[in-house]
Image (cartoon, rainbow, N blue to C red; front, side):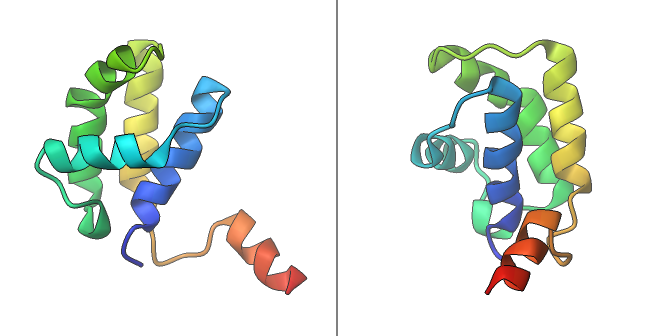
Length: 95
């Protein structure tokens, strides 16, 4: 289950920005904020998204409204890594 919440953040953020977000710089930002993306709890992810993510977005030339960032933070916090996402479920069916 490790990094599933982080993976979800990358996907949701990429969709919100309508472009692929580079994983490694975001991973470094999460670590730099004092969190471990391998063991991220919902409240930690929400805290990162509301406090650190807006600055990271700005430094990397991205822009999201405050409302959109808050919605993203809530989505990531509520994500349950113990359940398959629809994408993961259909990928397993294709195998």
